[in-house]
Length: 509
Image (cartoon, rainbow, N blue to C red; front, top):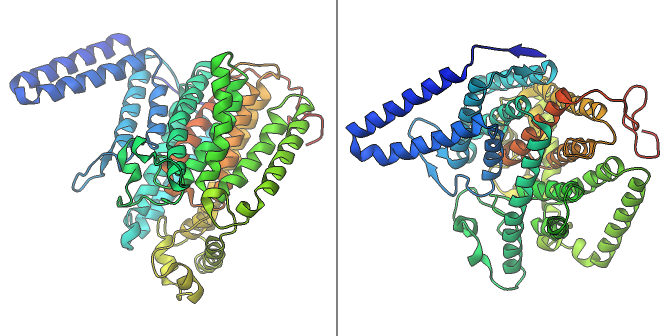
């Protein structure tokens, strides 16, 4: 553990704030036309300072995470020539960094760095940045020109910074509750939009007029796809599937810790999440849901009841599949059909092409964010052209993508990061007393494993670095989990063996 301290006093921070306010008001008095904007900015600063001083700074992280699902660049964007475009999520991230800066400034708190996880994170960021610098931060294919810098900042740097911030300010009981309740509340909005979309697509009442923001319904917005599915407020169905899988198990987690009407509402939301997942038509989501179900039943359930729940869940799923066999084997994604072969064939072709590229440039790859260019330089595969034409075809496996773009070295660093992350979460599991029933419990660690499995399983079928929401959600949650490991008191675990290995309830590992 590395600690960094400094001379941080409340008096110094208060004096700096007063100077800032006086300077802003003086500027507003000199330029009266700018006074409304200055007053609004001061109000925002006041909220940021208040949240930082009172310990609410982590709430900004979750506002940033969930803003991807409602107020992303299709809602509003400020295009700045020669600079990054400013969208609401990006502005919220700047506000988040500001709130945490004031938090560390006002509170005499040590900045903590877990050597293993943070070290590999830093190495990965430096390596990927060098790779993008050598190959170019802007792509040469028009459709994906933003790939190098967009994926670096939106899917790596910003989520990793969120990990650092939530890790350093982790107050387990309170912040875990904030995060999961925020996800559950957002889930109401996500499900509402999903059912409105599904109703319109399945020939029921046309409810799209109830959806807000209106851009969600527009088929003319560049970057929005999957209009034949219920994708929620996201640009594609993939992030919606990741959210719904996590939402279902979050509801199960919260149900145990609530009572009365709230408990009933969470149970209803969990039930409604399952059809909404089918409406996304994301087959990777079905696989992720099953994998997460195994993890949840075996390690979040108490005693041998976990095996019983797993068996009943498996039986229920099998019966549901048999009852809807014609739909399941069909090609209509909105009804849960998995028989569409075109995407499967494309992934097979991408696998073969990726292996060819890795064989040509095994160590350092073709450059971060430059997969499409390398794929286009290959001799055009007639089968691929027959399936997808000559347009840009993105990689659909995050590990293959890292292997192609950053070589075996980059892929090794990336895999090592996830291994160390799981090891840190395992440390949290070992240190939490088995009978802890609050929010900072072993069940929360299992919930993080669910999200980790959700992300990695989906990543086997989709390049997750195009999905800033899923990365923000994963790494913000990871910061809480690793922070929990550093703050929990070591305790003997009833479910752990001599070496601390995890055992399924009532059985061996």
